[in-house]
Length: 116
Image 1 (cartoon, one colour):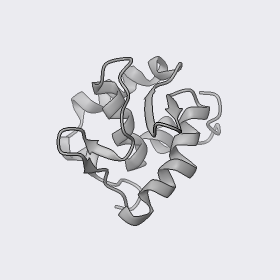
Image 2 (cartoon, rainbow, N blue to C red):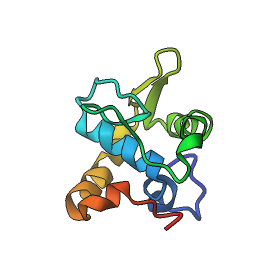
Image 3 (cartoon, helix red, strand yellow):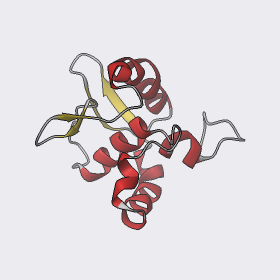
């Protein structure tokens, strides 16, 4: 994957970070052209995503995670609307995300692997 350092795995780069993992799984579960609120972990309840420090979640999403995922082509980010949708290269990671979602325990999606 272009943009990821050679010594950094997909797991370490994308999946180990809870904010990225939850957002990508939300996009996986959404219709291909559906927009997703990057701050809402549960569209029905509008619960916020989990983060090591919830007070910094919007800042970390908008200044670190979304730009990174957009640069890699995994998401398309509409800054004005504050929404994301699948990017042009989302198909490249879809099989790995599907594998994670179907084979790992349910609490994996909501467990911070970096700060555990």
